[in-house]
Structure formats: C-alpha cells, structure tokens
Length: 120
Image 1 (cartoon, rainbow, N blue to C red):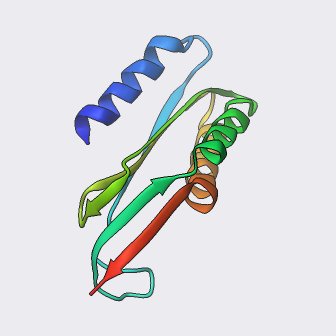
Image 2 (image 1 turned 90 degrees about the horizontal axis):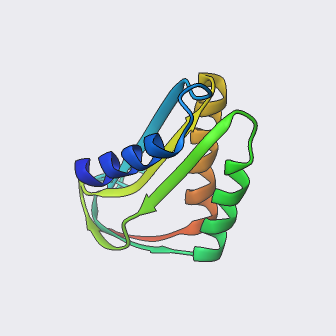
C-alpha cells in the first residue's frame, strides 16, 4: 500500500500549482474482518465498473477548488487487512477537499466498485 499511495500522491504533487493548493487528503480502504452486519468475513472479491469509475473521476475533477482527484482499486481476491480502494484529492481548502474525498469514496463504492464478501 505505502508504495502505491505514495506514487499517487507524488503524481498529484507534480501536477498541481502549489500557489492554488493548500491540502492533499487520502483515503485507504482495507478489507475488514467482518461484514457491516458484524458477521465474520473470510475475503472479498472486487471488480470495477470502468465506465462508472471514469464518470465519477470526471465529475469530481470539475468541482470548485479541486485541483486533482486520483483513485486506484485493487481488484480480484483481497484478503482481510489488504488494501482495496485508494483515493487522493488535492484542492484549495479543507472544506472542498474533505467533501470531495467523502463524495469520491461514496460514489466509487456505490456505483463503480463491485464486491462480493465471502463470509464464514
């Protein structure tokens, strides 16, 4: 995880204008050991709807105050504790950045991430 997230952050830093950007925030989603309902999980199968993914990125990048949005999804079988979704958002002020980061995670998980939990 550290390498991929670091690479994403460096790519964003290389593209932004530091005179216009005051914050970069990240999300690192990992596979939990339980479902949301509290049942023990064994692993997670992850796939991506590429069209929805690209639409989400395009829309979020147009938000006021946002200089960059990057995201990466680890697909296939993911074990407990492994990374799943990485998101990096850069922008002018924290209100814009945090709101966009939260919306990005919600949108990706709701529309573009296809997952199937294997419960015990």
